[in-house]
Length: 298
Image (cartoon, rainbow, N blue to C red; front, side, top):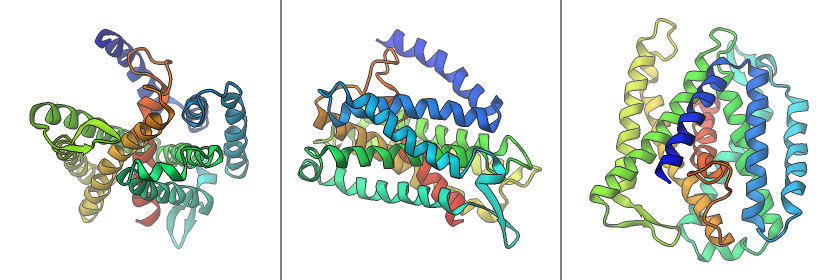
């Protein structure tokens, strides 16, 4: 199992880096759309694992909805961003999608905190689970695209580094939680959702993420391009702090849905890792939360 995980990671990491840093924005959008479709197929398992027709139906439905947003906002920086009072801001539809995503994760926090009682409201309702999948995956797609296109006209790699920052925060929270929890973990974080997670591990992950955030903030503050001046130091640290917490929420959310569906993994596409959703669960929360704080409200 460990060998499979390492092999899969060694293959995926270069592909992810190449997509983030080398692909033009339109091709990057196509790549993320591919991830979106694969994740949609796996979400169907969480909705109803016994319905063999649901994955294709969900792929068609979700793709039509995502496609409709792309028809309104083609993946070009001039369509995603516009100038308002001298500032470059996201178009209202993208901002709205990100806000919807952030609101969903606030609701999700309540669902996780009150599980299993909260499951009574959705576990037997297919339509509700389909909608929840939609508000999980569509904001994920647009958060990725919004961050990647950030300041694209001035520096095509600025947004790529923001995407990488979020990924580093997620990896830091995950790795920090694992090692801290393994060494010091005693008190369960959410025993009815994910018995293996501990409060000590959670706080350890936050500490590691904030160290990463501090390093990133200092580097961004001294860049010649002025990507982040010193006055925004508190902003980036606050954004990274909330993002780190949300990454754990994304993990717990998928665990909650898998527990109700009675499955261990969302899929088998990635040897040693499970499915696509098992790899991006934290990012589905972290990316929209980071984007809505950093790009929309500030």
